[in-house]
Length: 290
Ligand SMILES: Nc1nc(=O)c2c([nH]1)NC[C@@H]1CN(c3ccc(C(=O)N[C@@H](CCC(=O)O)C(=O)O)cc3)C=[N+]21
Image (cartoon, rainbow, N blue to C red):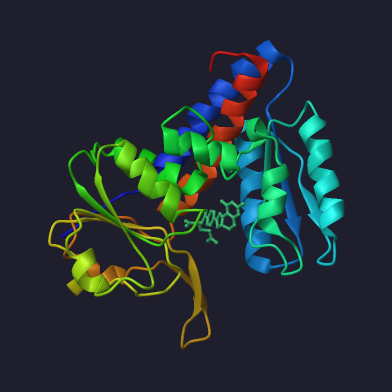
């Protein structure tokens, strides 16, 4: 029978700590930290996430400079907006909400963000720092996973971690962070032969796929730690919409030792790490000790 890894409770506690820290820092610096969130188009899920980020910013005293653009905004225009935010001294973090509409080249835009304002940690410079084990801005979702494990004193050292998913947003950076924490890491994905057998060897099983109920109990070693990064909105037979992860929670719960719920697991940790990154950039840029 598993215990819950309560991301929501930890996120609340960390955001409270951040708000105290920001109060003192802003007094010394004469201005609060600033985060610019760029959203293009009107995907309702993205709009909800962006609102969540803005609420969290105001909770901890970060000024948010949200910008919302119509779906048909051009690459050139967005590039210019990012360049002016790079120059804007009030802005310590810049985030481009993904996914972008099809006509836009997301990677090219992420590359425009000044690495010291890259709140999402997706710029090649920051991903390169992660590969080399140097300090830098770390991607928010994987950083949230690591912080949650650390808070529960679940040390990945010597453990076999299996990450299902190889995205730049989650799977790849998370595999590197687990490696940095001395886990033995396997990255599995849609072409992995006998995924169930690979998953079953995991002491720490992380899924970041975006497929409801992908992880069933036969894929989980008894006593494993299960971290569910999936965020899937499904419509129940009753017509109600519900947020679920990649793990068949009810069925896996009895097999695992620790498990993250969805909602209330990694989602709130992701937002908290974004705030943390913004404050970190602010301290670096202003030469403040945090
Ligand atoms: N550049 C970029 N960076 C991102 O970090 C990024 C992104 N684009 N695009 C979309 C994904 C998704 N994402 C979530 C963040 C918080 C919750 C979250 O807080 N979820 C709550 C529930 C929220 C609800 O009920 O809708 C929870 O899991 O408890 C979910 C998903 C960040 N993303």
